Length: 239
Image (cartoon, rainbow, N blue to C red; front, side, top):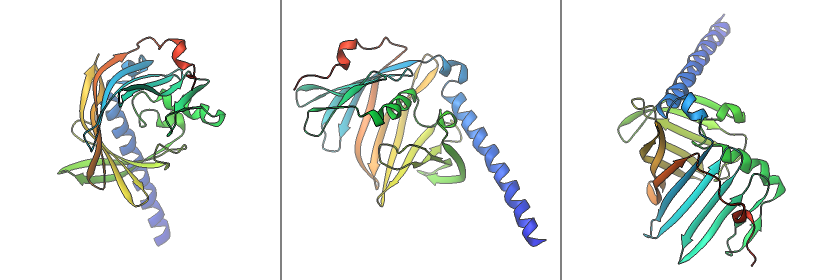
């Protein structure tokens, strides 16, 4: 009888948490613009300034499309460099030697899926087959956040597949994305959002490691459904 009671309580708790996940997710979708408006966004072009802890500023231009296209160009040490160019089928990326490597065949599908995430990892979690769980309230910066754990099928840029997402219960917007990597806590803190055509995009984000800010990114311009870059930019430069 005791075991049956515990099982019943567990099932009830799981159902409550599942409802919380759906409600928090739906509130988030509505907060950034709603399903109808989000569905109309097929591409996003951004002008970004990345600033390192040492004070170096790196201007960047990015283009991302749900058809699988990704293009990122940056200016560094007086040079204009293409960090990544992928047309949905093939492309190239900058390597550590400042040369270019072809996109590997095994990375093509991963990049195509990444390109579809125009609003980050959370929005398309069901479509990707990822797992989202509500883990309760978590206090940070004097805010009692709604805390979710997102477990992705693919490894992210930190080579892990689990992240904690903290949403402000008043605005229903993401304010922190926390990742544990080799004993370090990487906190991507969203400082502000920018509204464009009724949709909310991240405007400024600070990335800290164990509480120390390492870099920030500020988005100064956003264009929705801008035309794709010319096909010539997806041809690997000769070295």
